[in-house]
Amino acid sequence: MGPRLAFDDIRDRCDIAPARLIESEPGYDDGAVVPSGDWVPLTPDEAEQYRADDSTPNSVRIELVRRPLPKLDPDDLAGRLDTAARLDPLDGRWPTALLGCAASLANWVTTTENSATGRRIGLHVDNFDRLPYPRRHQGRRRLCLNLGPGPRYLLIGDHDVQQTCRTLHAHLERHYPHTEDIRRYVAAGHPLRCLRIRLEPGDGYIAPTELLPHDGSTTGIDQPSVAAFWLGRPPKAA
Image (tube, rainbow, N blue to C red; front, side, top):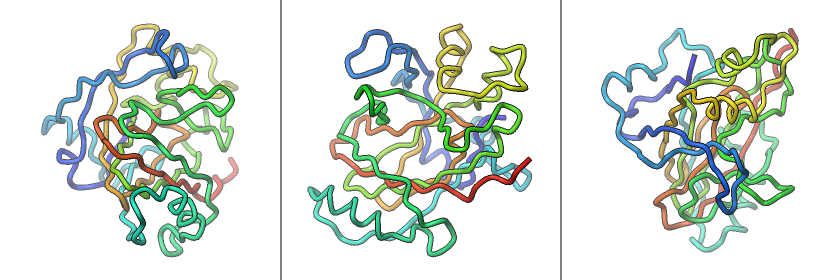
């Protein structure tokens, strides 16, 4: 099952585009997967396809949240980092241990960097819980808040990494899904599309980033922004 969106204004907030592979582009891993940039609005049928209902499991559910932010100078990125460290993101309804923050410059196609190389990695899956294929859907969801000053986007692939692995691998019991599976899937010619969800300052998402290919983006936005991240509660033992 691909992503399911648990909010009402899907067509107002979302666009969709094919994904593509990066080859020898400055600042990126070779083989990284990014959106093509050919963004189009979702059709009514597509919006219904991606809409969550009461039966949708949390393992693919993407929720949006809103948190009032203190007034900060637009140029004060450091102040936003301090704000994140002191923030109870959802007034006690989410663990308050801050995972980290990421400051993104304006007009980046994707935002996540490999800290060892400084290159951006494109659509990827997180691996905080290190779960194998059979349990991958049990990973913690992540909360992200956009602290501004500019808007930003959440990018989400339309196939989860378990679907990707089923296409690529014959023996899955001990396989640990990885970002490389997404890259191999697209390199082999399998179609992957990317949803783009707009987040204004103070907007956030709760998403299963261990399962769904994802990244941030500031494409077409002329301001930087700071994203703050928290993890949910640990998964239950099998």
